Length: 295
Image 1 (cartoon, helix red, strand yellow):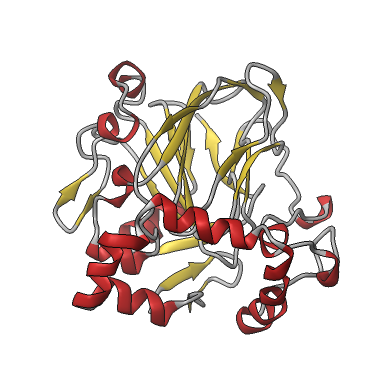
Image 2 (cartoon, rainbow, N blue to C red; image 1 turned 60 degrees about the vertical axis):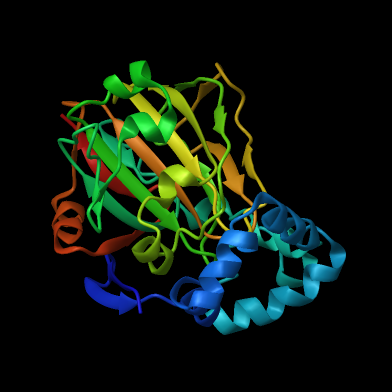
């Protein structure tokens, strides 16, 4: 059971987890953990399943998935029967009015839909601590010079579950560098998995780049792959100007995570988000909504 804070209703809710029985079995049973290490975390497993989700035969999964998890399709560009494959549905685009972008230049917005955690005044050797395991930004991106820029800054972690809109966007106007890719495993990023594999963020496949934003200094963007995420696809053009809310890329099937690091002294995060993180709860947010402001 995953409890999170709904920012709109101001209430705590229970997340609907796609394949929760499967996840609990994989990450809790001896047999499941053995299969995880031998097969499920491997690139070949996610690639094969991703290839199936690209095929027309996978269309039959769409309607049961939507009904079981009560996904709102009214804001999608395509109608339910118009998708060519499950991945076509999974990477669906939304109508512009579905995710209005908070336009104030002094405000930073969420890069996507999902569950948010925020950490301020970060120690680069201990970005966050899970079950006694400390994350080092140096290990996460394998680049000390870049990591040093964000000493004492802010870390924003946005977890996407399979029911979420799976495109990620720019949080400000600016110019983005080219993407660096780091090979890794394909563990689930669900809290069920995180409790068992606390260091999965730097064990999983990930990609990172530097976004030179107009209003918030340098921003480190990291996208983390997960089980059955056949691809992380970057759709932006490196070193070209972009606007706040422009698409940066998308994840194919599977839950995934976007992580942002922002320089010290550039932003203050909304109190509500800090409060819920300190209580141990993720907050549900949507792409384009305000999550902080410029100092």
